[in-house]
Image 1 (cartoon, rainbow, N blue to C red):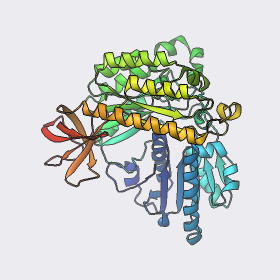
Image 2 (image 1 turned 90 degrees about the vertical axis):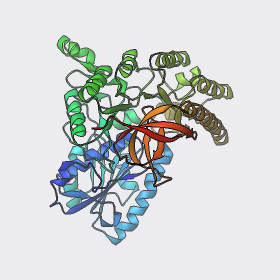
Image 3 (image 1 turned 180 degrees about the horizontal axis):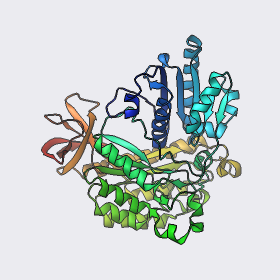
Image 4 (image 1 turned 30 degrees about the vertical axis):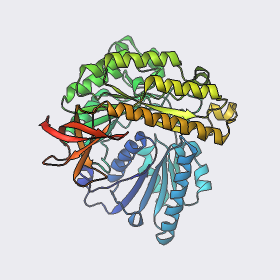
Length: 481
């Protein structure tokens, strides 16, 4: 997945508008999770103050940055192929500088400079404020690297540049890092321990986005349900906080309510949740406010209790079912999506069948499914043999994907002959005569354009569907402005 900055798009930060005198050009690409795309917006803001305007043309760039993902080997190989492309351009424009940001930078550190001779700077996720100093090092002919993980950096004081924006939806980062230490996951090593952002700065960003015409935000974190503000610091140190700090702390349910109240007409989403941390009060808050979207991304990774234990997932299959039952009881129309891994070390056919039966119980709306990819430095890589043959992994993944297609169609068809509210985000990819947007349940819907425009909330009568898309006609114009 790739996204490139476009400074001409609607909704871009006023920082760039005030920097018309900027002469240097920045080209940035982001891969991986939504947090990386959000971080790229922070980077663009920091560099705008250093004289960089953004460009969509790689050949015009003075500085090229790639924001990387380490969650799977395929993501890293994609980045290395892009570096080959940058190298070809750099041969024509030798003054162009190239930097690697994000999780690969944190994981490989100085090794990146040795392996990829084209790379001039390597910057980890917590060191973006040091970019001006690092660029000075590069301009003076030295390689530059900063991958130090921070205990308190949240970038809460940086107003992000909205990159490649449709002017309707935006990310708002609320936490950084992860404490869960799943055995397959590199995130705790590349993004550090959990710490949360001051809720006041979050509300200020939400209000600013609404005032600039945005209609929907997504609260982001590696594990949003772990959000806990008690005045700053790591979540693991909360028990050492004063009684006053504990009494006045803000958890995720309270933050969600603050956002819903701050802008009652703005749609609010969040991602990602961890089953062990998603509490009933969050679900009840979702049910309480109409502007909180009825969709929860709830990665389960496996349906087997034995494999869940091997993964260090701190929930069982039965506990997951209980959580699903509570969601269905409190929010009957809530969409639920998943992450699943096929072929984790020692996974048997019975373990795989447990995953399929879990899917049958939940019948997810959609999901993200992958074969296991051994990641260097993780406990699984150090302690477990990657012993499931590749052909078996692929076979199991195909069965998971096929079952998810069936469930997606079941869930999508539930909306036939109903009226759903759709936020228009863009023109349909398949027809210039149709708008495309999403429902509260995060399902894509398309319908004739008529007199509507991007950013409108429209009631749509659903008359047809595919396994992933609702098709209908607008019947009313509602809730605008």
